[in-house]
Image (cartoon, rainbow, N blue to C red):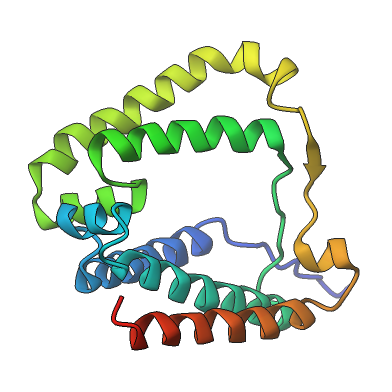
Length: 187
């Protein structure tokens, strides 16, 4: 009798890949200057567009990379459902933290890696506090507000009922042209 071997998916491998890409992303954030408070403040004041350039570059790289890996069968996408309510609550929590401290979660990690105490103390405490407050409010928000304006787990290509590359290629070109324009304008 022939034994069949069932390939078990490793639960550790995605974590290792995530950690590796997290380190790379953090390194690039640091090299780009996005972990410095003055650079982030300059972006918020619309005087320094370094952060926008980094994030738009990450969007293009991410969308091409994710859909390439999906096309190769290396990954499966499982988008979470979204809603207007979730976007409002998440945007408010993110915005308040960003306005108070001047860092987003990714730049907090990078700034902590650089040894910036404001990010370590204010950022980590802020993430814990914000998470705790959300956890306290969640039972009241989940049934009433978070489901308002539910738009499901559709991606833009699914919504338009087209092959993902029909969205990715033109959007990638538009973002790259916009980045070139920002650079040529000296922003």
